[in-house]
Length: 293
Image 1 (tube, rainbow, N blue to C red):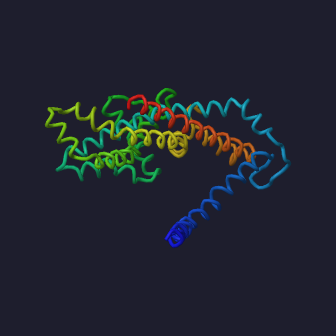
Image 2 (spheres, rainbow, N blue to C red):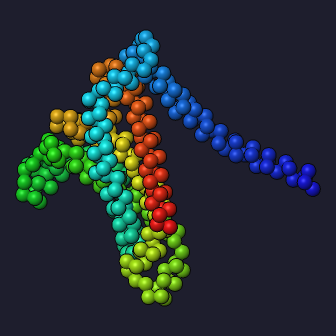
Image 3 (cartoon, helix red, strand yellow):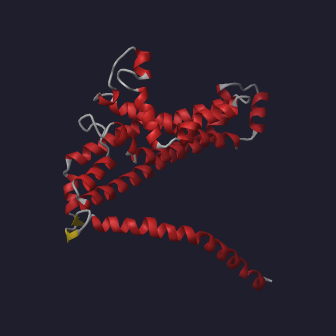
């Protein structure tokens, strides 16, 4: 009998390999090999059209001493600081509202998620129209004529607010999925014990949603660190490069200065920074879960 049962795992392994094979081929061709090519390019002195001499780690040595790179990285961190926590918190609040108002659930869910399906060009046009100095809705309501995207203090926060409005619907769906996985029996039992309102949220809802919140923050950190389109279209990196983020600086290095080798070094260093930050944030979230358990 044992002999007859041994081929079973093999019969299960073959379909799994066949199902994973297309993804593996796409991953190797469009991610792994280009990543290796980018790393090799970062070790050379190259333009967009020609690869020149091998220079080893010279591009990385230049990167460490490049104030423009560190300034762009600081602007990227600032944008992440402005967006990661608010996007997670607002996504949770919206999910709770959608889950509570049963009759208007479809309308609320559609209204909250609708901006997420807009292409970035449409989103930036809407944000630019609302923030126009003389005819924008925001200045009209506030009774001001401020050029928000031309203000040294407010340019990046306005980009962050527009991004939050644009992408918060994705986090809302994640939290909604988490809410619908909480058994209703838990709420009924707690209600019989006299629990109401915030007590239910603190003792049942939040503990169940804490893993979802941790995952949402990690995903949001990665997305916020990859910002490029919003600042490139809304502010073109201005005023005075205060909204020029890391990917924008990499783009200018490659396509304006035609220094592909140095741009590849920026890309490799930035990917490593994002990976380390994501791992550190995930470890921190697990540590908090362990302490609160």
